[in-house]
Image (cartoon, rainbow, N blue to C red):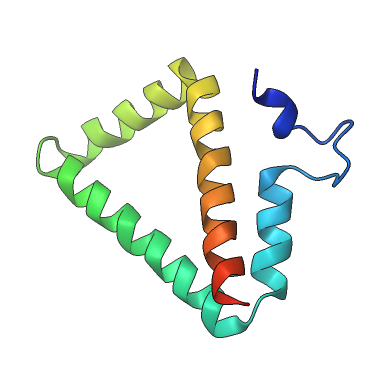
Length: 95
């Protein structure tokens, strides 16, 4: 249903959320882009810490790879949402 919003083909603005995110990050004010990338890395680190407390590194890696394979569509959709959210964060701070 919402896939049409995320596809390059036929999109009047042409570009996927990933490509638009990259455009915004590489063209934004450096301190704003750095702040958003730092926010993302700190969030990723917190999530990894939470997960590593319940399983060892090998199990964590195996679980991630299995999830990436079994839930590829859901992960792709979530990644698109994160690109859009981060792009919005950078653009709103750049005004």
